[in-house]
Length: 413
Ligand SMILES: [Zn+2]
Image: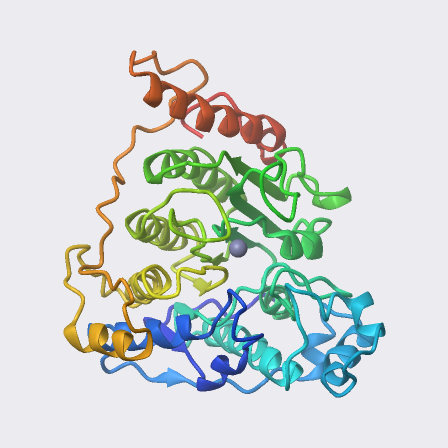
């Protein structure tokens, strides 16, 4: 029996104040203030007006065990009470990236519950789209925490959707880091297509996500990786996205699109080296929404992810994401409301608060038009940037497009 795919209402927003308890240490780059500032900015811009915020229940063990081992879940539960225990280190806990914090299990379970709730709203037909900006913990593995991620909420929700009868689920990950945990969970499963666009693994942790990673066994052809060079700006990133993602999605014909919307691809992000602006990120969100509308009857589940520009990046970018999901798209020239500015300055004195919802990024780009399709312009910098992204595009297309029934060199795919 398949899922009940009847048409449904608009967008749902899942939010819990308990998301703010997912808090490592005061010095840790993933500070939950970014989520609080996002919700305040979205509210100040009336993006959330009249929208009921759905407060999730924490995920239970039966849900966590869809993806994680019981030994790991038990360790997350008990590690805070055993300071100095060396056992936790075997599960990726207690290091600089993933220090042990009080009520770690509880806070992480709420995040999983939030992404599950979003999936449930869509599966039940109560919403076509659902967003949970607290989710997106794409690095968490079956047996260990990794890269600020304790439980892999996205993988849990995808597994749940599979159990409901969805059997073509497309996952698109635009975080600057490779979506390794989600890829690992489904690389052998032809029912889940995982696509990750990220900074090249030779230049950034976790060091995976090469174009040659295409899935394993029956899942061969269900993993797509586009690895971009440091310094890639909006227009080249978007050229790469559009040269790879729509073709793969069209061939796969998903019933639902799940997006991990990490915004550490921003040029100001302290942990990575891509060079997007909030304008480019907004364009990416809208492109993923359009793919869901075109190929998945509008079913779009969006979660957050990385993003360490706590004041200038995450709040604006994910406000654009919330607006996109609710069909309340904000003009990029929208001014930042004074009440939000004042709030930020009261919490972060001397913060460099942005003036508008734009960074002035250039999101126009010429479409990829096949290998050798573009003559050199004679402008050295531009030719170099085109060459870099087109080299990445071709590596990905040639590695995986034939397995999707597509011609890697045909610009129409
Ligand atoms: Zn990241």
